[in-house]
Each structure stands twice: as structure tokens, then as C-alpha cells.
Image: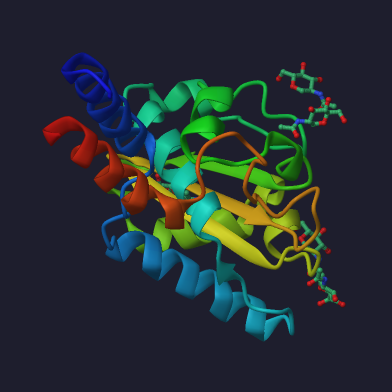
Length: 193
Ligand SMILES: *[C@@H]1O[C@H](CO)[C@@H](O)[C@H](O)[C@H]1NC(C)=O
Ligand SMILES: *[C@@H]1O[C@H](CO)[C@@H](O)[C@H](O)[C@H]1NC(C)=O
Ligand SMILES: *[C@@H]1O[C@H](CO)[C@@H](O)[C@H](O)[C@H]1NC(C)=O
Ligand SMILES: *[C@@H]1O[C@H](CO)[C@@H](O)[C@H](O)[C@H]1NC(C)=O
Ligand SMILES: *[C@@H]1O[C@H](CO)[C@@H](O)[C@H](O)[C@H]1NC(C)=O
């Protein structure tokens, strides 16, 4: 028989695990619009459109949240390089939060941009007319994208469809998502026993 304390501990542990899971991202029109605009641009260039990559979006959202407190100047000249995310704040923490295997991010490219009020025309032209970003956005190698924003920050991530750049799950010890409800209710049962 499990004691009351063990049941309580398990309940708290399961709540913590739940809390660590990324919450569903609220629909953000600016993010949707940017992805749509960039896909229109890619269609014109005869490139495959970028599907939304949920894990990359989770990561973009977390990075944007952390950048929300950072002055625009800090990243104004940020030049992204695949596999070199050493300047992105809390990169490892956010990778873990979104349950991504860091080895699946090396070919991806993370492009943070700070623009007052995230004006959509400025956003689109900054992404597609600045050389440092354009060469990734007009590249057929990238198949999916993640988008996140906070305050004046937009974060656009492009991902490949290969294991070194698809921003997929870590083969971690966390329970698979479909087992979560079962784990939760089992814990509740123990608690009330
Ligand atoms: C990675 O980023 C660091 C810090 O910005 C920089 O010093 C280094 O040269 C970069 N490495 C590559 C391979 O781009
Ligand atoms: C990533 O790759 C390195 C080197 O191959 C390996 O040591 C590490 O365990 C891998 N990390 C994950 C989370 O799979
Ligand atoms: C980028 O956005 C700024 C607004 O902050 C605008 O003044 C500038 O012209 C834009 N640059 C490009 C290349 O679109
Ligand atoms: C993509 O953009 C870069 C930088 O502007 C440019 O040098 C390159 O020619 C472009 N490639 C395509 C396929 O449009
Ligand atoms: C990745 O995309 C290329 C080109 O679109 C395709 O040939 C390949 O089969 C895709 N690979 C995977 C693993 O989906």
C-alpha cells in the first residue's frame, strides 16, 4: 500500500511534468501572416512552401519570450549560422522545454528580428531583403518553419526534413504524450486511495 505522502508526491510530480510541456500556442495573426507572406514569396521563386513545424514554433515562441526583455540593439546585427546558436539566450533550456533533441537542430536556422510593433510590411521586407536572412528563406533545402513572437521580437526558424535539422523529439525519458493522461489519472487514484 502506498502512503498518503507518496500519493501526494506523485500528484505534485505529475503536475510538474504537465507544466513543463509546452502549452498550445495561441493563434497569433502576425506569425501566421509572416509565414503566409514568406510562402507566397517562395511560391513565386518556385520553391516548396514551408509547412508549420510545431516543435520549431514552440522553440521560436520560447526564444521570443526570452528576447522580450532584451534591447533590440543586442541582436540587431545577429547573423545566423546553421548549428551555431551560442548567442541565443537559454538555448539548451528552451530546447528541453519543447522536448526537442538538440542534434536535430544543427542544420536549422534561427532568425530573430526586432522591429517596433512588428509591422507586417517591414517584417516581410526585413526578412526577405536582408542578405543575412534571405539566403535561408530562398533555399529549397528548408521544408518547414516555426514562428514565434513577443513584444517587438519575431523569431522565424527554418527546418529541414532530415534528422539533423527537423527539430524533432528527443528520445528522452519523459513519457510519450499519449501516456500522459493515463499517468495523471493513475496518480490521482493513488492520491485518493
Ligand atoms: C559561432 O558564434 C560565435 C559567437 O557569435 C562566433 O564567435 C563564431 O565564430 C561562430 N562560429 C561559426 C562557425 O559561425
Ligand atoms: C547528440 O549527439 C552527440 C554526439 O553524437 C551525443 O553524444 C548525444 O548523446 C546526442 N544527444 C542526444 C540528446 O541525442
Ligand atoms: C526593416 O524595418 C525597418 C523598420 O524598423 C525599416 O525602416 C527598414 O527599411 C526595413 N528594412 C528592409 C530592408 O526592409
Ligand atoms: C537567395 O538570396 C541570396 C541573398 O540575397 C542571393 O545571393 C541568392 O542568389 C538567392 N537565391 C535564389 C535562389 O534566389
Ligand atoms: C526530404 O525532401 C526531399 C525533397 O523534397 C525528398 O526527396 C525526401 O524524400 C524528403 N525526405 C524525407 C525524409 O521526407
